[in-house]
Length: 531
Image 1 (cartoon, rainbow, N blue to C red):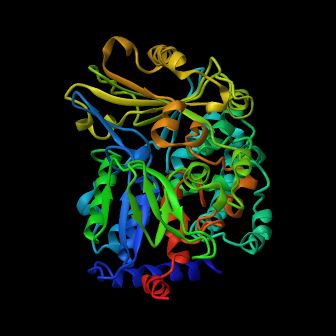
Image 2: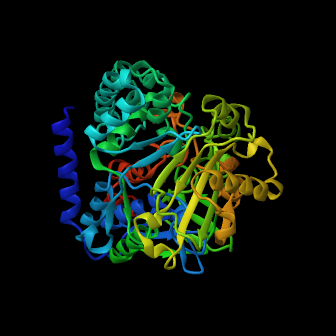
């Protein structure tokens, strides 16, 4: 299918949905339960509500958002999870489906540079969406790599045209769905890793790191993640990097409002303990609803799980209902790294610090091998530093700054006792920041808290404390990921980071978009219920 015809098809589907939104729910509207209120779950609930389903979102935490929840303390506001908003059209589409405009509820501001990248030796590279500025930065860093960089940009766009525009919203339900794209993927060299493809075009090791770090934003190791993820470089270039005034929690609240506007409900403090399934022979293993930890049974005609994919199968679905996703298979999957995230506010402003800064440590490949392969908590680290007050000063009291700093670490298979290591690791990061970008940070702290892989397991029910669910290696991509439509149970669907297309805001929002193709119309569900 050509790019033009694909866009026309997508546009026509959107128009069809718009024509029926918003509308009153019918008295016999089928009930859809969504487990989890992360961005994928909220987007799924909006789309199902617009189509005429009666939707209930169940969130185990005290507020909606899942990993995108918000922490507040002493006048500081901290987004707990996603902070980089790309492909804003995916949000705009949700508002449009509900007959509304995103800009009426959310003030999205472009951020530049996209990232300020600082090497351990003090070199700095401003990564932007400007072709001219990027060419100048590449020329300054490595004059001999300008032509190779330009060739990489061209290749990234080619991969984007296939990997995002053609495949991100397509269901991979059958093996032939995968077979039909293999020739094109081979042509685009998807068998290479991200770092391998980048290295084909540029020789400077620093430039290779700059052009290959993106998989870490979605839980992948640049040295093992399929090169299809180089599409992120063009995706950012095409739509830019944005930040919502008030934080990403504003997007969450806006999406909750859309759900309620189409007749849906979001329930917090409602932990799902089990997905209930009719015995085989009665309804051929079809979902009947969910059972909460409180014992309450919530009946449903279909269930969408935005919970971690591994956790969904391992802990929410009884083994007798799982022929494909057995305990052994779930455990054998490769999972993303964990994260250590420190949220802190200072009584001092650090005006020279960019909104998004990446601090690369003294090691690159070796550190990633420690994290992903050896599962060792290394003494060195690379960091992502988020300073939202660079764009929205109101996220901290006057004269103060809000930050979070994120360090990729091994998931819980490392055996790290974070109850012991957490504060030590935080202080080590604090010292490094004080020595580099934030002098005197420890003495200027007003508020401080951190999350570890153990917290990702306990708070977010992430299998092995993996921050991004299933690792995006080639044989765990597209058809080889847990499917959006469950292979084991009829009427069960998956969205979020662990299913197709993967982690990151564009990925999880696209996973909800896939449901438009595979979830039946409410009229079909009603007809089946009537026999």
